[in-house]
Length: 353
Image 1 (cartoon, helix red, strand yellow):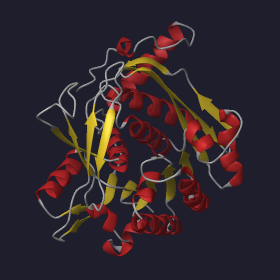
Image 2 (cartoon, helix red, strand yellow):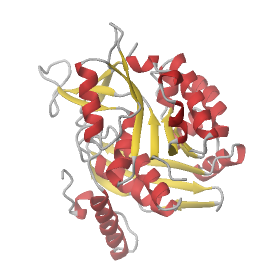
Image 3 (cartoon, one colour):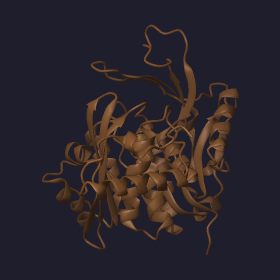
């Protein structure tokens, strides 16, 4: 039976305030206003690539909530499952982001405590939502925000699973929200429900206490839990403005690892949301191409690489542009014997279109 959505995601929508260009938070006098949030970034990217997506969240019933809702709609994401907080203390979580320039690193200041999203409950949402999607995605950030979001996120995971949805989960560990021990204890309880698992090598070793090389670490998750696919991103930070990005995907059914030459020397404008963009590309590749992990790898890497070159949290590249970038990168690799993509600019892509 055809579902209304290809992907639904549960997560907090945040207001992002940033000083323009490379200005400092402590010195600048103006902030640029944008909207973001890990799960919103993911569904926005998948929507831009052509699938039907929606966000499950709770917003304050005020002008800031309306602004956030309008940005959700602008990205082509359904707001059917946005609910609103009418309490006098309703608020939208905020974070302040300052760009870095070598040797100064980027910095973030969060102001998200007691946001309206932390009050969301399963009872806020219609029961038929749980049978409306092919895939459900959330992250460790949602689990970490509060005891309430944790309990309700776990309940939603179970309900979507009972209704036949594929469950996608991104560890997305944040040390300012919980400890590695807390994350491990909580996440291991939901892994029996997870089909697609996103976890970096560093997080696997520091949080889940895994040992060995990346391949053995990824494979171990599928041996311990009924996880079908594990994806791990690999980022090398040469400076705040120059990164290299790639990934590895493991398919447990095929017992096969998928890898390609990473995108080298990406000209970073704004790295925030690039990990989420990877997930959006990978999920698109899986959902649109019958769980073809090679396509997931290609779309994930390309979508993330491009997001680094775009300001703000949210992606802004459609399917035609990403397909062109993948094609050009493969052509370049073939011409140099699968050598590195020396610079992202060789792709000659209109990155801000």
